[in-house]
Image 1 (cartoon, rainbow, N blue to C red):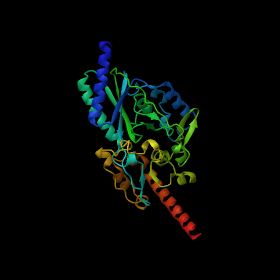
Image 2: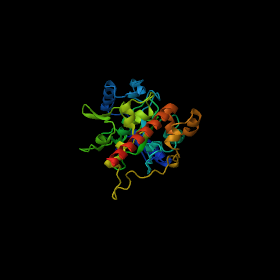
Image 3: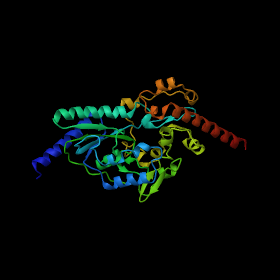
Length: 334
């Protein structure tokens, strides 16, 4: 039988996990550290320059080893998952946006939910401190989420849950509480390489005995983070993607629903994600003024691309569409 201290740690863990699920998260787990190989993989990724224009991934890199940088005295992390999948319609001539960005900014949605969990936890555990983080702090979130049992790393480097797939967002709640960790998630892609083969730019590459994403070639990075005009190959590569890219997840077998596994890629029930923006045509977006862009993108993840970036993307999409139409016409004439 465990000690009273062990029982207390377990009960605190169960209670925090319950609070997260009551708030609406789909899954929750606890980690007290992440495997050393995750840190080694991150450092190797940086050393090879695979962060591309994501300079912030190299900045404050040493702080990413632990949670101390965001919460002094942190001993554990409650990690959460929130599904965002929903049906999409692709219309030539209209912007194509990654599914996570169809509705309200996930940073705001997940952070608000975590803050409510933290408020309840602070009331139940006086003296304990909590700090939410959602893709905006020097934390290796995927490594913590893997350690907390929320998913294993696919070849596309997304976290994949063997039962639910990969259409989920992650966030965390660093805490000074001592908690009982969950077992890291286990699984693998086997010989499947659909994401590698389908990636428009060949951005999924081998890095030693692991797979990694070359951010400098990733369509998501090109359409969101790049702060300059496209080079010719980049413009061609983005195709009809105006913000982000879902190709590697769309082809993943773990995201394909089956009669025996209806939970895979199930449609989200989060109202903020289902409140899909009604974007105008690419022709209209390509001519937006700064004021029009500002008004249209408030509260949307698409704002991250910036005014110049979004117009650049829309104009590239239009040129690619016209080129594609011309190619089909030439084939028909031939």
